[in-house]
Length: 157
Image (tube, rainbow, N blue to C red; front, side, top):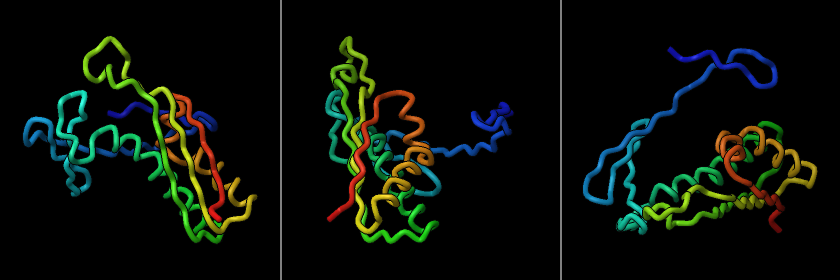
């Protein structure tokens, strides 16, 4: 049974969902992953002697933040009628890969730098979209508890 979890702000009971992904090794350094009927290949990173030809777990992890940001910006634009002609997002993360290779270094990500650039919104609309990203993106709200996140939001011109 799922534990009862309460909203941090209102105290109401939350209705949690359980996104799920699974995978199996197909050869050393390569796995096939599955989620919601989709399949994709994952390669091991160089510190683990993987081929690193396909996307690796770190790429997926770091890539989830800009993907979620773009989806939140697009949703806010659609919900509020904001004109959004273009959007792009980039994330960089800082970590020491020696920990992945088994050295005495914690391999955790120490910081994220997020850049989200959009074309169309006014500065006020851009500020509202930026705020929505930092409140609505489950990737952001989870990661902000684990590492510094530096966010730059700008209009594309």
